[in-house]
Length: 125
Image 1 (cartoon, one colour):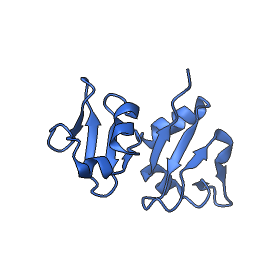
Image 2 (image 1 turned 180 degrees about the vertical axis):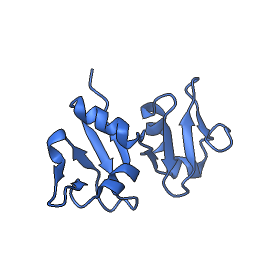
Image 3 (image 1 turned 45 degrees about the horizontal axis):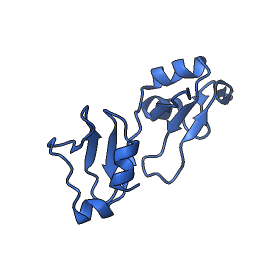
Image 4 (image 1 turned 90 degrees about the horizontal axis):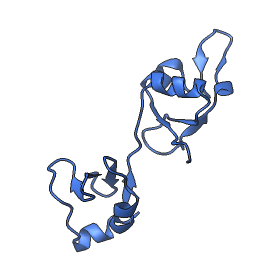
C-alpha cells in the first residue's frame, strides 16, 4: 500500500515496513508516522510517495498462540521467512501426532512451531 493509504490504515503503535528499503515506520499517539530507528517524522517526498509499505504483523509466542487456539480464536503460523509460502491458518483440529508421537503441523516440526512466528486474528466487533 502507498504511504497515504498506510497513514489511514495503520493503528497507533503499529509498525509498517517500506518494501524497497526495509525501513520501518510507526504510527504515534498524535497520528503521525515516524521512522522507527530515528523517530523523525516521515516526510511526503517523491520517493516516499512512490514507495510501497506493508504492515508488520503483531507476532506472538508459541504459547500465546496455543492459548488462543484453545479459546477457538483464529491463529496463523508464519513458517516461511522468505514469503514464498503463505501463512497457515491453524485450528485445534489441525494438530496431529505422527507414528513417533512428534507434534507436527503440515511439514513443520515442533521445533519449527516453537521458534516460528504466530499471529492471532483480531475479532470483528
